[in-house]
Length: 444
Image (cartoon, rainbow, N blue to C red; front, side, top):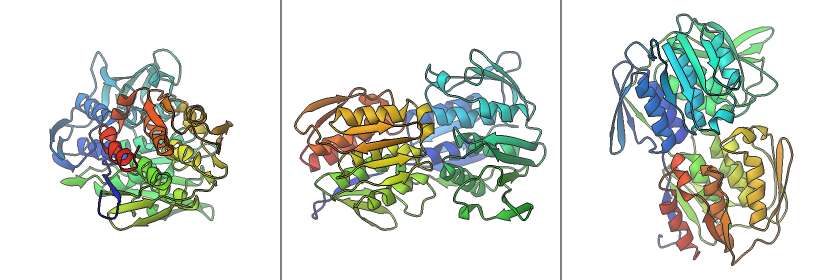
């Protein structure tokens, strides 16, 4: 703690950008040094799958050197190369698309929960590129075997109703196609656009040639992708030219998703919390935690490299979180400290995350003494007296975001015990050490 009684925490590196930078490095010719990538189970899954397809990694303190695949992703000739996803949904969706742009046989598999998470929209897009898709059990779900012969290019369609990661995977794979590839967005709605922006940012940094086009006067017009705020199905498309990934070094910025727990703790605790290593100009969608907490009444100060949140009286809000779904457990817990109800909308896709995060968030808020209501596409948190002074074991559902968000209840004077503390290793192995700074500083 500093002299002004502020608790200081350093944010971990961005998980989303670490995935994308390591994939781009693996698809490059030569060697790329990725500086400060996140060290977590999910990132290790992605590196293991990329290694299986031909990339090489040399992990050193603060830097990972990536030697790119020779002639693209390589699968098995007679037996599939096994791509083991375990419980990493991001790895599964991004790597499945990359494998589809490769050559040979690949088998995508994971944990039982992963085999309950849909992937059919993505595999349909791969089939349009000549990939033979064979499901082992349930159609549209892993395990699945791909027989790939490189992307043919031309045109493909993808729905983003379940996940933006389908589009991100196809965008990263499209430069490997034989011809120019046009990716059309279909469906009724599209979620999590900021994650697509992160993908485009990495592609631009690695010198990939692409355009984002929107419908205009019956035709298509190129637009600045940085100014796109949302995806409207049928009115936007992505045109990617065959090109090579090229970059010597890539620096990974701090992670707004994992910073959110500390920012919320600053708002609902009794000491300010300062998070270092954050860029307020980041393209990460979860930077929205600042505006969400501010709309609830939190006092926040920031500079080019840090954000400080001060103890504040919070009020309920109604907020569409379709663009930042990973923040929902954090906001749900913070809302339990407010003086009026909070309704979070456009979040149906949270039901197919590591767990059903709508059901789980509601259950854990009620476990702490609050009230909650959920519908198909929303969750409402209704504040009630929290169980101050009690020891509560919170269910974590083998979900890192539930484990970290329920830790915020310790700011209410609850002895908050996570059922499975180790599940945070999926995205933030050092979370509990950093969190101890917050709890000790608040006298918890």
